[in-house]
Image 1 (tube, rainbow, N blue to C red):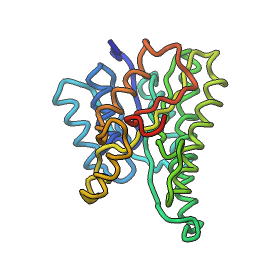
Image 2 (cartoon, one colour; image 1 turned 45 degrees about the vertical axis):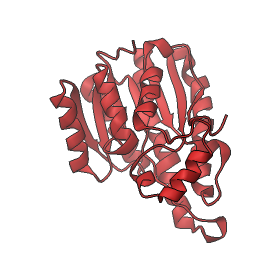
Image 3 (cartoon, rainbow, N blue to C red; image 1 turned 180 degrees about the vertical axis):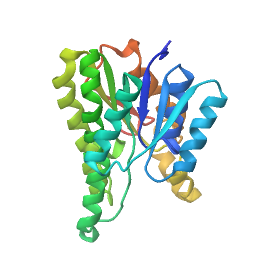
Image 4 (spheres, rainbow, N blue to C red; image 1 turned 45 degrees about the horizontal axis):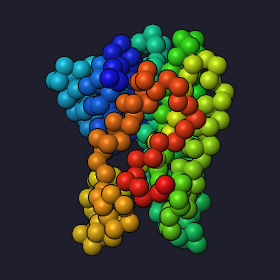
Amino acid sequence: MFDLSGKVAVVTGGSRGIGRTICEALAARGAKVVVCYGRGEEAAQKVAAGIRDDGGQADVLGFDVADMAAAEKAIAGVAKEHGQLDILVANAGIAVDGLLLRVKEPDLDRLLAVNLKGAIACAKGALKSMMRKRHGRVIFISSVVGEMGNAGQVGYAATKAGLLGVTKSLAREYATRNVTVNAITPGFIETDMTAELSEEMKAQLQGAIPLGRIGQPAEVAAAVAFLSSDEAGYITGETLRVNGGMYV
């Protein structure tokens, strides 16, 4: 189930956290994975090396996702180098928190450049190859915050909500070429960011989650593997919530 043998997958923000686990999950199912990074080359190389040690295939690719021209060129280059690009997981993202009255324009610009414009550029770079092959999977990693909002995250919420609109629009644009476009909205997932929270804060978060726990990166990666697969071929324009019931 969810066999990805012979597929080429690109994962942005693949050097750590949820992105790393997504890379590992896709590779374990047979895909050749391109681990993309912005600054963490050493971490990306470790991810790729670990995949190869486990018998999988992986390369690394560095570029600034906030540079739209560079991002589009980098993703298109993967398709050219490998002769195909079957799966794009636009996972790279940043968070800049603050109440609206304290938010500065450069912070908003950076959020938009990375989280929204960068994801769009990556999709643009992938879609030409997918259209020619008449097959492809584009998956945007959004956030539960993009659906329900959160105090102190107006800019972040705006970019993640924007991805949901992008998902629906691209799904309509490329369905005739058998390219599906979907989004995943993780809730609170155990990552480096949540590890910094106090035990009191973690307890409060868990109290707001019907399943009563913080999610695991592997649970997001499993959703990505499903949407990447042939079994999900009749699903497009959808948002798959991986949030433990926090927002339904």
